[in-house]
Structure formats: C-alpha cells, structure tokens
Image 1 (cartoon, helix red, strand yellow):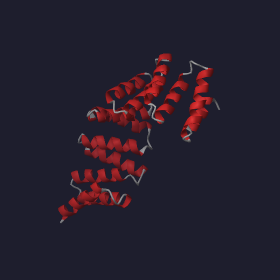
Image 2 (cartoon, one colour):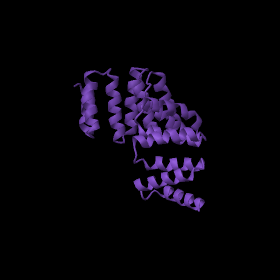
Image 3 (tube, one colour):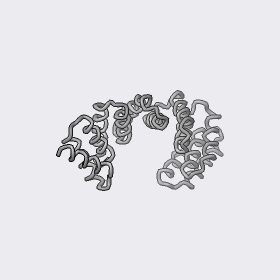
Image 4 (cartoon, helix red, strand yellow):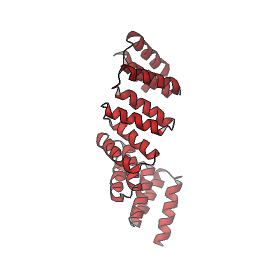
Length: 218
C-alpha cells in the first residue's frame, strides 16, 4: 500500500497526525505528487487549519490545472466557510476538469440552494442520485428542492426512496407528511407525521403537523 493510500486509511480512522506524516513523506519523495498535496490539504481542513489547507489545494492546482479533486476539496472548504460563490466556482471547475462524481454534483446542488437558486440545483441533485443510488441524503435534498419548486409528485417519489434506504430519516418522513398534506391526503400525511415521531419523539415540526392534520380531520 502506498503512502497516499495508507494515509487515507489513517484519515478514515481519525488518525490525523499519522495521516499528515505519510502525506508529507509522499510530498518529500515526489514534490510533483498532486494527490499528496490534496490529501494533506484534506487533513488540514479536517483539523480546522483552513488557510493552510487552501495553500495545499492551490499548490496541487499549480502543478496540475486539471486536478478536479483539488477543486472539489477547495469547494468543500469554501462551503464550510459559507463562501458560497467561491464554492460554486470550485465545484464547476471540478466538473469541467472531469470530476463527474455524485459527491461533486451533490455539493454543487447544495451550494446553489444556499445561493437561493433552487431551480438551477435540480439537475445536479438529479444527477447525484443517479450516481449515488443508495445515498439517502442525496435523495432527501433532491426531494426537498423539488418540493420547494412545487414539483410535489416528484418530491414524494424521492422522499419515499429516501426512507426506503433509511427508514429512520425523521426529516424525510416529516416532509413526506407535508407533501401529502399539500396533496390533501390527510390520512397519509398523518401516517407520515406519526412515523416521524416514532423515529424522533421530539420532532417539533412533525408534532405540529400532526396536530394540524388531526384538527382538520375533526
């Protein structure tokens, strides 16, 4: 196993210092190894050293203008810093440089949501769910944006797929209840609110939705 692969394994185990050490060794052995710079930046980002992380991502991009993973990592960092315009630009650069991953499409969709561009986010969430078929969160966010843009029937389909993947996703159950309420299917809405409360008894929005539906049903 090479040092980058071993370092990633350490990152997955939360062993940040060990990971950083291996990535630094990889850089010293091959100063043109863009992957090592990206990985080291990811460690720095994970431990809150954001400015240092940006320098390593920029170094990777200087070495290889087509390093899609560097743009993606830089986009994630900008997203965490709530610098959404810059995040959007990075995810778009990643895509243009060949990073056609479900995660990149998902994060571009999330960024567009933060920029109040929900309609523009829809195709990116759609593509993310095509590539990440079993990712409950991708389905959830896709369902939410469809609902916000008034595509209620499509939203219901995605939220149902979300809870098929993760039956304990209380927010998806709650939003399904809202969608069924919008469709004037009170019984189904009540069922969804009750399921959300079974999963998360302190889900205040689900409790409120249940109360409203029960009042409307008399």
